Length: 617
Image (tube, rainbow, N blue to C red; front, top):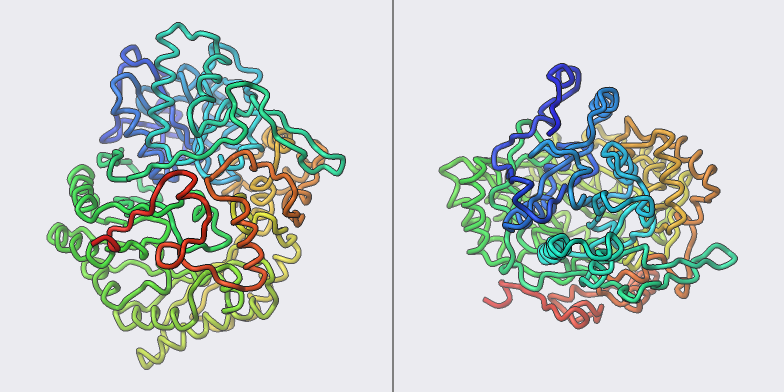
């Protein structure tokens, strides 16, 4: 057990990140379990503690009598310096055991710019960074999450990946680890990896070889082990009613990013926005029953004492029983001072009644995501909403008492012109005008946030080359000149960050050496502007002899082998190609839940149906 000297804690910011002993944490005797997991989030405590996926894994593993799950987050650089100086290894918050003593270390991959933190955490734990260098006494290093759907940039470092939803897969992995250990670890690490490769949804990169063409494009990724399937397909939970939900989450001692109850209404999205990776990875839509949500909410309020319930999903306003559940939640909890919030709203699903309902207890901010400034470009990305939808939504919000809204847009989308950029400013001005029309005076506060489009694997735009950094910055400056009204605030994302995100999103195994070089030069917490150093990355690419523009900016042809072709989200590549062509024609594709099936292949291929309780009632 690690003991952190009080003097160390007194020298670091927010020491409560490292003290453990939080309410609802689970501490088991390591000698009493067969499979011990260290669940590792490659970012700081406040971010990791806000992640619902990690709470789900923690809950499901700890329900098993033969397994234990503990948590570890990336120490902030001040704490890392103290740990390295004092020789304190990376350790978990429950038992303060070194991470290197666990059977399994599981990373969640939410964002490409967290990859250097994974290497840093392995190094702090004293675990060899490359899987090929690990021996029988080292933990198995596994990873899951959306970035696992292009696992290749991390192929050298991770022993195996789990694709898709975790509730059932983690049970299979925990059982396999426990059985292997009880059997005396037959075959050693490689023997276990062969067992793991037979679990649906598990990808063991060492069991595959990558070959390249003379022009640097990928020729093939082929299995080299009999246990490895040619294509690994994601895991999916057919019915969310049948899996456990974490109603007793660990409560932090300090404020975290999402310091509230997260109530997941449903999983998946059938809107078909062509830039959205999550919309593909989590298909099809599967809703929880309103009665189940009310029960879960009651347990969460009882077990946490939180005063806010956030209704989370990819598009919460699309929950078919939303009006009903909002009303019932407010009725059930208003006397306890518990409010209900909706984190992001589609601009076509909003209603005056809903706006009034959610502000009864406490008014929270409103965020809309038009994504593009013109109708033409919204048709290209298949957003499926109009300017009239936005006008009606913000008008309803202003009449219901709000005075400000946040608007999210992207730049750099396929077929974008300067007229589309100018349309963003025009749309923001229109929102301020609506406030004046509703209120008879000025005073609206409109926050416009603009990110740069990153082409993501498994989407219709996966072949599209990202705008180069100079072009993205030119568009940002153009937009900046168009915001002259003080009631509109404008923020944008660093183009260098978006570029690096695109490189690793569409990268292959050759990027492993770049990651290693960048980490050795000091790269970490790349998602944090104060620590992001693009010059380090430029040097790392030079050192590894890799051209990053080959990955981010190159338009790819439909017949090119992609680094993620052997990792399936269940959606047919032919469907994605068809959607890309539709996009170039600005032709819409209907929501498959409300209109005709678009034959993406996921329901048929995975044997899972859409679950829509509003349609069935």
